[in-house]
Length: 414
Image 1 (cartoon, rainbow, N blue to C red):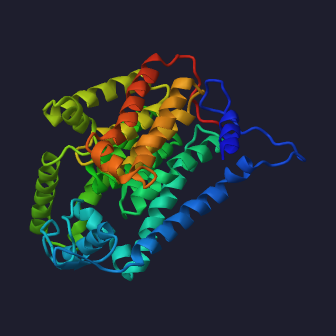
Image 2 (cartoon, helix red, strand yellow):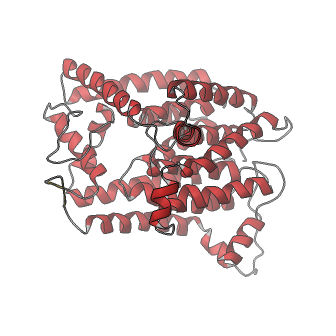
Image 3 (cartoon, rainbow, N blue to C red):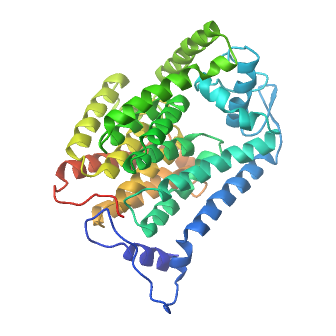
């Protein structure tokens, strides 16, 4: 394993460019284990197979009991699925349904309607396809990144793999969120503003922070065009639930959506920078102030580093996680995707490699059984250690954007 890692990282060119081309292989040269593991078809197979196997293992125990109620396994999927039926039966999708789901639904009415293809299938089949969608779209998004060579993309996907598993074993939508945010920038870089706007709107109607995906897209040119498409797509998706409910019902649903999300955010600080301030320094800084200040930094460095839009994208992916009130362990697949793009889009440095390793150990492995349960419960979780390496990467990333040399070429390769 160590030999594979050394060979894989040694294969990354040390020159500072984001438009690297895959080196040609000699016709009769022997393919190494690293070469085989970095084949796109193999990586895609591993992603999809892992999604299916993890889902089946989670479904295998069957329903479980909690507080006197019997719940289906993969409760996040059950909540998404039930929201569709609650919507079409004119029920308040944000009301508690303790008999069938252990938590509240906190997504948009539009997402509840769009979940129909999974909700109408048998429970197990829908759950498998939902997790498969999350895994496959994340692979597609990273594979489609226009300024990385194939080898770097596959290395990035292997790095993200464990964080992706953490998300899908909870049937979360975070891998899909990362895919949509990356995909929006990919489409805009390729001049497809209509698809870029569609992905941004989809992400926003899943989780509101998906709107930040617009920032790197505005740096790619044709920003007026993407804004026009964005307005059209946003209006269409906002009224889409009218196929199932009346206008007055929809107005109430949007009001309750806002109230539910606001109440949830005020009740917790999550695995975030605000949680770190609270637990490490006992500072009760208003979370809105912290997020607003970080957003200003994000925008300023994005403008200064506009010649490196992929780094701006990485900055956004990390930002929406570490400054997210509701960030949980499965949410970190979004931040980890940003860390991967940041690292593999630049030349190797000792500092960057140290931060990459810290992210792997603390932001990914720390939530697994490889770390003793006592250590996780008594130290890592209370002190939000999972967030620390991603916060450090984000700070370093802002420096990278500000100090980036003007002469560096970030054009999309032919």
